[in-house]
Length: 239
Image (cartoon, rainbow, N blue to C red; front, side, top):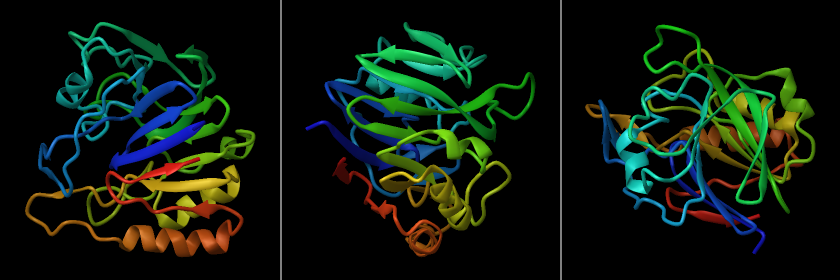
């Protein structure tokens, strides 16, 4: 099988591409600060590298990274090394760079988002990643719309953020309607919505399917040629 992805919730996706396995933004715990997870998952094994889009706590979670293994290679935006004390293999990247890991070519893509850990101090870029093997997979990270989405080239699968964990999304995020606009720019063959319905604030009810349903409707209008799959937490798809 050339490609298979499994959504582990929020922005965490296990991507099996050719003979390599990558995990994006692993946040696996039942509780992260004031957030609670809807569906538990186990830490993935056999991971060749972890791709981190930015430093926010719901994307870079140290205990989750440790559960995958402190020796696992980590790719992190430039300036993001500081929180990762004790991890043995760290590569810092910025938009425009290309690297090769486990036989897969990985392009670092811009993202319109404040990537700093606590929103203070020196600016740290947020990034997305384009994985190029026998299939191409675009992981957008957290981002707003940007013109460069239209110049990624042929994309088999886009992992597109559509919401968050609260009642609204702030600056530097996509909501369902804008995520559908992103599909119209990227024009992938397949899209999977991520960054929705996994975590909620502890004192509120868990998030429902509304963001995903809204995204599906908007995608039918904005990018009807794209095959959209809404996965349950833990669900997978061959690409």
